[in-house]
Image (tube, rainbow, N blue to C red):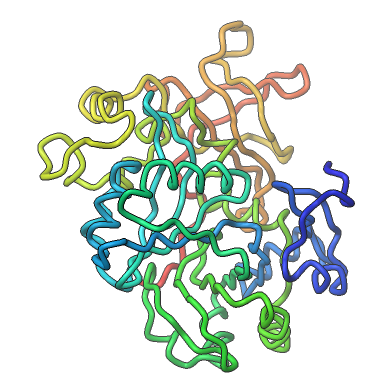
Length: 378
């Protein structure tokens, strides 16, 4: 755990402490891991009503094309990601991946077409390297502007729409992955209908000076509770969503990570803009021939959560056939849940394996992802 005296603070740190948040170090920031309600209740409340998350530690970046044409910024960013950015329409957002020359994943990110520029959100632990990466590779065509004066708030759950509509009626018309400018409490905000919980919801970028007022206004709604990092992790795990540094990293490719859906056909072999991104030869080969291993869901038997460990074929084998990368208890499914990588030949749903849990071999089953039915508004 980081020394809290050396940690950075978000615009909402003081409010998180006031609300009873148990503060810990995460990605260099002082963040609430839970509030007095506790992780289990916070998780279930988000699934049933609406949870409010401070995600201001994430990086917010504008890519502004020097030509004034957003298409040039899109093509420039396509040098770094195996994703169709040029085809992203104004007011829409897409999941993307920075890849390296070996086909590994440097980070995952969200990219929105804002009409005259691209708006990019990157992971907190990677944001310094991501900004440097973009400046080193895109500055010939784009101004790379890191926004350091804005908070980022996620509102997630079935009651998220009604809670935000009370402050900004126009957000009701937004569909999953829509992005637009919205005036909330007289402040210009950037709102996307997206999130990291598997539920319907929004992420709102708000100027830091108005962030506390905005959050207090949402928390005045009894359906909205503050939620910490603990429940954020269990929610995303049930939803089968990757955590960078655990489930994806430079040692994993998009194909091995079961993220083929994030690479549109136009960037694949035979597509109009095939290749041209770091690691294209490796990644496109895996699209044709497959990867040697595969990210899958793992359903442990019993009630004990399994947070990591090597996977084996049977009780006595000594050579691992995979490894769990994320695990814990899933409050919604009322059972332990996990995900990890197995040899491709063992990735079929229903395959029985064993994980080493404190010296004991525990049976597990390869499962489909996600563990819950997502509630996105299409």
